[in-house]
Amino acid sequence: MKKKILILSDFYLPGFTNGGAPQMVRNIVDRFFDRYDFFVVTRNYDSRTDRRPYTSVVTDAWNQVGKAQVFYCSKKTLSSKTFSHLISEIAPDLILLNSPFSTPTILFLFLKRKKRFCDLPVIIAACGSFSVGSLSIKRVKKWGFLKFASLVGLYRGVIWKASFDLESREIKKVMGPKAIVKVAPDLMPLAVRFGDIDRPVKQPGAVKFVYFSRIERKKNLHYFLDRLRGLKEGSISLEIIGPAEDKPYWEQCQCMIAELPQNISVTESGGLPQDEALKRVAQNHFFVLPTMNENFGYACIESLAVGCPNITSDNTAWSDLEEKNAGWRVPLEDTDQWVEKIKLCLSMDQNEYSRIAEAAANFAREWLERSDTEAATDQLLRTALSDGETPITPVPGELTEHTV
Image 1 (cartoon, one colour):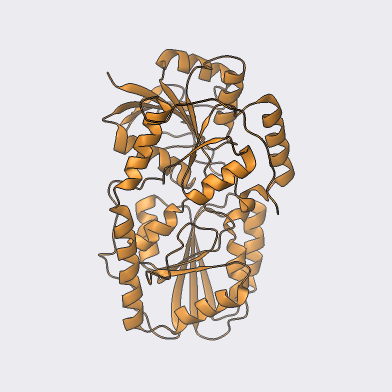
Image 2 (cartoon, one colour; image 1 turned 60 degrees about the vertical axis):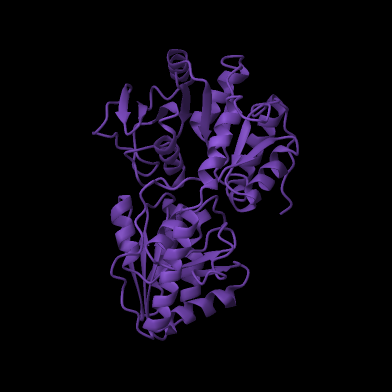
């Protein structure tokens, strides 16, 4: 009989605008449904910017969605009482929580603190929440909550999922050296579209950039707009794909867009379904993401897969972009180098661009063909279920603030 895994996630399918966390859940379900029975509890709408209830599913009831049973909570039923009832009904062997600061995570951990379900093993996917960049946003609120959580032992005994070694170090820096952290890179969909499509023609003096991510301060779109301000030669276009999660921030970006030189055009496409969004990405020359923090970067690897080379900040994990000739990873502090890369993209001819676009697709293909990524998640789940080699020893974490 298969063991049961219950996943509590702020957002999930059929939504498509809320970034990588729902994708992480979907990909785990798709790859491991033959080994475990999955149950997902989530909200009944797409994102904080689109709170219209889904019409394709039944709210406050179980729905078969892909390979998982999914319960979509209304605003009224997203509560500890509902979680307690559902957990008792399912009797899961493992709880997987998506993000340490999400409402479902906090509701469950308070249940656990009250000695409800305290014997259940718990995995929390950090989802980039403990990076310096992420913690600098709403800093007082986040650190206040973390200090409270430390005092009451809210995260005591959980297993932390890190996507890379860097995130593992970030978690231990915040939660203390005794925190149990397992590294398991986020999984990609089983079917990924590769760059076997007609790429845009690249002429010297003309370039198409695309930003494909949520519009929020952490993603740092305004940084790229600021780099464009002084470029008054050549034909430059920027397509912005993604929902405006932070309305005041988006208004700030729109003001900057209005002040750009006349040779720069900006298209605002909003949030789009994944397949449509990637088709639009593939119609541009270069993907840009000057993010302050990126836990995994689904958009990075997906854009590479469709043959769109990347220009990202050094706050992404893709450190070998330049080595593989698939793009550049540039420190945000080096504004001159960002401008240089933009100018390099602008001047590039068709032959050079074809080489770098092909290298981008090859980079993604090689990474996605690695077998160790799925094995790491398999080991994480088995360890949490006490089937792995590493025993689970609940220990309290020590809260230590980043040096910033």
